Image 1 (cartoon, rainbow, N blue to C red):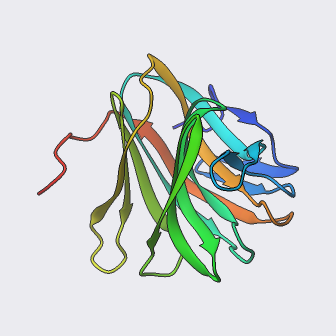
Image 2 (cartoon, rainbow, N blue to C red; image 1 turned 90 degrees about the vertical axis):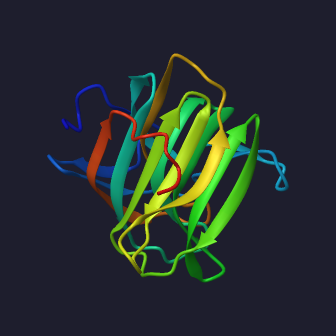
Amino acid sequence: MDLKEGFRWLNPPPRFEIGETEIMARTRANTDFWQGTFYGFHRDSGHFYGKRVEGDFTAEVTIHGRYEVLYDQAGLMVRLDAHHWVKTGIEQTDGENYLSVVVTNRQSDWSLLKFSGAADDVRIRLTRHGEAIRVQYIDPADGHWKLARLAYLRPAPAMQVGVMCCSPEREGFEVTFRDFSIGAPISRQLHD
């Protein structure tokens, strides 16, 4: 996949490099994607590098980040606009790394899944099936894809899909995205 063709930044980070198979970024301070719930603030300042995709799809990426500070985060995002999106990836919270999913349909919600392995080179997948967004990750314990979340996102003919990173509490979170791909959706079968 050509990592430059059709892609553009929403809130470009101060430092980034886009190679043939990698995207490297270093975040700006106080960056985040969140809408209202619990905290009361509305932020659309995170770094998102994506492209328009029509219909259903599956996006995958391997993430390697230097998670050091509360809420350092990096992963995948599917986005209609500032009020309708899903982001998922590894996020630092309470001194540990979790698989995080935030679903925003005007208001954001947040779910966390304790990640059993090291947060190095985590492979995640996001699939759109109409109004459903399926989030999966490779479990380091057995190497199989596991379901993290099945969520609703308002349907639309096309969405922006790509990688995102944020650091609400600092500047300089460094992340590398490897082997990013967007392709045909995987099967709708949820269980083996």
